[in-house]
Image 1: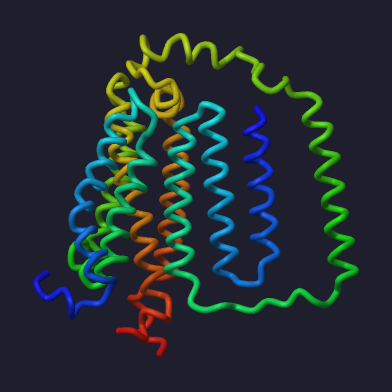
Image 2: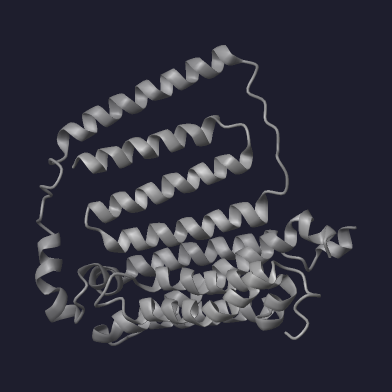
Length: 174
Length: 133
């Protein structure tokens, strides 16, 4: 479990670097490091589906961020209103830590999940869904409507991006 | 693809390696999709790998070659048809035992086509590529 903590420390360090670094491209690369660390953490927690998903999504989002959105280094100001910024940061950190403390006290310990509903999925994945991968059985068979909702959300997001970023009506505005 | 040195894009090394590995990346995306019920993977991951193979073309050869291979309007029609078939398949009566083959295929079509369309739209929108045209 110590290597998982090392990876978590690496992710936190990369996230701090991503926030604090001045260069925007370096920040994007640091965010990519956070994603790769999360992928390794998923692999260590024996969740290969999530690890593959995290790796691939991370690569695609990194390519999109670097190639399509960053054109030049955009300067941003860190000065001004530091009293308000520090106070609001401390306030939200306190709220988050309190909520996390009271929430984490009630859920079961790490590695000892409650198996009331999910036991059914594990027992019936092969016989009812015909799929040896339990994750795939849940996602596309027992909870196929969840997948429908996910695809609907993604489709709506794609339609929105294409409607905003289309090149058809841009010539008229010039 | 005869006059490589006149086209925009990356160097000859990148173009040659891309031409070799492109089919394998596409094949790997389809493999992960249709093999998702026995191995880790699924429609979403396979779709993103398929999209990455087209992104690979666009990064190595420039956007004209990529758009010649898969036009933007055709891509939109493709996504919409895949989404309609997916909706009909889930809402209507479908064979439950084969849903782990059929659902990831259409999910791969929607995710792959959609993310590549978003990439195309953002690249065409950015001013850097307009100036290099």
